Image (cartoon, rainbow, N blue to C red):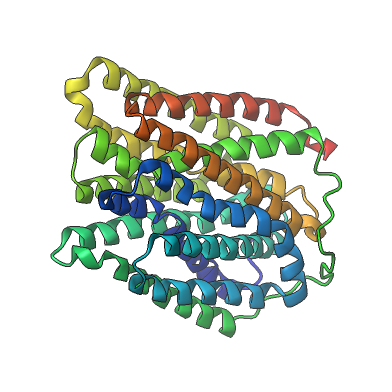
Length: 394
């Protein structure tokens, strides 16, 4: 089954590409600002300026989208991202990064709800929806790869002091995506939400609670890599900034590969079995990494190559679990449901960044892999319970 509007596929993917770059430049910002005598505890709270606006605005975003429509809301969010990224290179003060990330977070809340809504309104079958979700979400991984690789080359070049001007390229992509959306025909939902706050009834059932718990810890794990892996490489493995960013880019490349492969083969497997198989492989890899880190420290450089492999199996988890639940949600509630997903994700990201910053501040990076392993094991237990519950209860 395919999307009814085939011309909308490219701008949807570009939307996720753009938000991926602006959200996941956090690792680059942390890396660069840490060299300007800004402490890790302050940088750890920087992510909260992105995540808290996402969480707060997500519920109101449903009403915003309902009033103005999906297309206009997406265009507004992308235009705001483009304009703010255009001005970022010309501002030198630290507080502007807080404001910039707050604006980015608010726009992401709008963008993700709109994109998920469009996909759900054009997909009904569970595995077809999973295929489309992985395809669009794969562009999110490409964004991580592009932003780490591009900024890595810029930072290591003779123009490294002008690294912030790389954000101007994000502006150009944003404006181009706005142009594509203006040329596209998007079917708007018939019933527009005019409530100040959306109807949350029914989302307190056990399957939803378990689903949100699983989503929380998946994002928790992903952000442990996306935002902090470059700094781990630099501080613990003692590689330079350029190589730290390039090694992290390979994590994104493997993640893109994982989601792309999943979109091609997911229809052949049970979603639950595929999900649990990926978790088992991740746990195995993290155990190997921990053994090397604690018992074979002279070979610790091999971690630069082992961590990216995790992306192959970590990246499909979020789209698969989301698509399985979204397929069961009525179209009239999809925006509200997506807003809750965004809230859970932002809270998870913020809590993780603050807690992992303590590892860096207290110089206990030996526990980095064990920290992530504990979260993966917890996801496995929660996911097993989630899949055991009959989805007919929803």
